[in-house]
Length: 197
Image 1: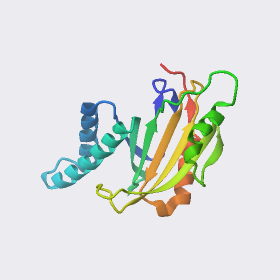
Image 2: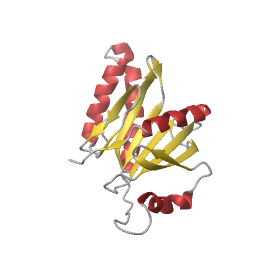
Image 3: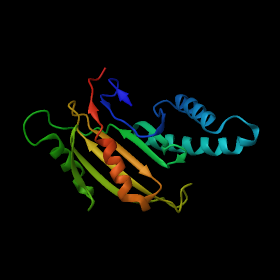
């Protein structure tokens, strides 16, 4: 996925849908296309199409509101087995010094350390050092997901451009925490930097 227009490349296992989040009309077109492909167009499937559209639109709206640049929803990692995971990509406006002082990731760690979690870790990857944060999140009361628990794994990267890249994975199977973290680590290990367009 990605390329010169984003400044990075990465490989996602299985089948993932990409939903643009910066333009609501493009979001709706993409969701209609995805839902039609996933559910079909039979009259008896209208309720399933409506439910899927609603869920995808909610996810896209939340991503847009949070300042995301891309949203990917997983259809399956193993063929025929639905996998409730997402990847939301952010380019947070965190200024890093161009010259002198501490290394870029050290500067980034200083920015996010106020909210440090016990399971935070620094990984060595082909794209450089990565700050990983693992959390289990309970859905807020009154939201459509009330009562659900989600595993969230955030990866903070500093590309050569120094424009911070945040890859935020989420999955509704927190009981598979160790395996999911291992899977998402493998994806982050595929990240490589490409020249921006």
